Each structure stands twice: as C-alpha cells, then as structure tokens.
Image (cartoon, rainbow over all chains, first blue to last red):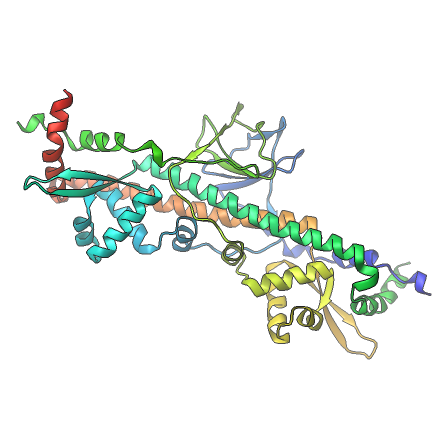
Length: 217
Length: 217
C-alpha cells in the first residue's frame, strides 16, 4: 500500500502543476524593457529606448513580458532616499540649485523658505555625494561666499540613472544571495531529511492526495 | 566695460570645467554591469553573467565604469519591503514555506515561533502577491486544512529578479520624469530671465570671476 502512495517529489510536482496561470502579470511599458539571453543567464533592464535590436551571444535577446510576482508602485521620494540617501528637503535644494544654475546658501534658503542651517547642511551633503559643486568666491568687501552649482542637466540625467543602476545592481546581488541561501537550505534539508525533517505534513498531504492520484491512474 | 564681462553661459561653463574629476567613483562588480549603446540612449543594467558580447544597433555596447554620484549601500530587507511590500516577517515566512516545500500556517508558526494570526495574515498576502500558492486539503476527520507551497527555487530566482526589475524600471521612469521637470523649469527660466530672474548672484559672480577671465586672455 505504501509503495502506491505518491512520493514527496510527485506530490510537490502535482501541487506545482496546479499553480494558476492567472497569477501572471503582463509587463508592458514603453519606457523600460526586460530582456534575457537565450544562451546565458544574463537578464537585463533597459531604459529610455528599449530596442528590439539587442543581442547577447550573437542572438537576439528575448523580451520578458510576464511576471508572476506583484510589485509595489515606487514613490520617487523614497527611491531617491533609498538610493542616494537624500530626503525630500535635500532633493528640493538640489533641484533649486540646478534651476538657478548657481546659488548661495542664503539664496536657496530665501527661495525655498527653509532654514539657512538646514540648507547649508544639505548643500554640504550634496557636494559630498557628488550632485553639486562648491566654489569659493571673493566678495567685494573682502569676505568669501560659497556658491554652489549643479551638474549640467544632461549630466544629471546620465549620472542619476547610472547611480540608480549601481544601487539596483547591488540590490539585485542581495536578492540573489538570499535566494542562494534558500537553495542551500533546501539542499541541506534534503540531505538530512530521513532523520530530522518533520514528516507530519507530508503524511497528511499524501493521505489527502492519494485518492486523486489513484483516480488519475 | 559690460561687454567684456563674461556672459552667464561663459560663467557656468567656467564653473563646470572646474568640476573635480576626483568625484568619479569606479564601478566594478563581477555580478552586474552597466552598458550603454553608442548610438541610441539605451542604458542597461545586466546581472549574473554580464557579458562583453552584448550589442545594440549592431555595435558592441560600451561598459560604464565610472559614476560621479555616490550611492547608498542597499539593505536586503528594505529593498524587499520597497519592491514587494514585504517586511522581515513576511520574508521569513516565505522562506520557511519554500524550505519546507509545503506547510500549513500552524507548522510555520511552530517553526518560526511567530503568532499563528500573524503567520496567517502574511501567508494570505504572499498568495496575493504571487509568491506562494494555497491548497485546500481534506483532513481525515472531515475538516479542511490550508497548505501553502512555494514556487520551485529556479522560478523564485527568476521571478524575484524580474519583479525587482519591473519595480526598478518604474523607479527609473520616476527619476527621469523628475529630471525632465528640472529641464522644463530651466527652459522656462531662460525664456523669462530678462524680466524675472534674480540677477544678484550673477552680478556678484561676474564681479568675482572677471579678474580670472581677464587674466586668462
């Protein structure tokens, strides 16, 4: 009787085959595309002008059009905070300088109605991160004033996307590492399953599935 | 005298040319690569096996090796929360089911030492998001038990990366939109600058830069 019961592998297979295809979400966007190589494990994210002309290993890459996992809608402020460590006030200050092309801390504080000390703190952080440059200019009265300039807008566009990709590449690496850990745990579990694994759920599942298996034979 | 002063454009150019190249950070990672097309505006992020063999518009893509903006080090938990809306407990529960291959809510609660109601709430969310499947199994005593199964590990690896790319593509779109807005503001500003723009900082900058310009001629 026991030999007629489905094995654990057969059971998992039967359960997985039931997986509903309605879970699949369509990926369609004109701004970005996800492509995979038909030969290697390269998966890539393209933006701006996702072409149909990319190749990898000499063959056209295949566009990925479905995903079985739901994703959140990102918010620009939390993305910029996550990737560049800049909260809303920092972004406002950076945008203000870019729009003014050159500005001092007092000018930015006046324009945005922010505290002068807040503005100075973020301006220093923006220089450190590489989003703005600081220039010391001599005043007529002999003092010095710090004036900040932004990158040219074309450079801002390129550098923020490249920077975001660096962050996203690092994040993808962490997701992959977490999955690798799961895989290793699965391997270890299957090596030791005879002694240690709690078999109760499997016994119950097999019991419950038996009639279906028998019915299908 | 006025005609000898640098124009605003000359001034901006002079300031930008001073931009220190020490700001550039090297991008070198074996896990991911950033490539750009030499013809179109396509920039792409590749992972796993970043090849040197990708082409776009018939030509080898150029690897991007520097970035002038600093990025934060991502943390796997906040990335997963951001992209999939799953906090630590949700990830633990998902990993536990994947490692058990099939488990009921009570089994997961026992294994992790979590509250049964917390586990049930997250299991439902994980099914909704598409990370787990739910199966109703008949018990010998006539009742029903919900058993959860994970995706096969190979699918988990593919779907989490594709899902993360969908999220990252949407995020890149928002960053691009924010930059576009800056660009439009710059255009508007330069169209109306004669009447409205506060010229004070420019006057002061020109004053301060004049000697350097004259010195270089």
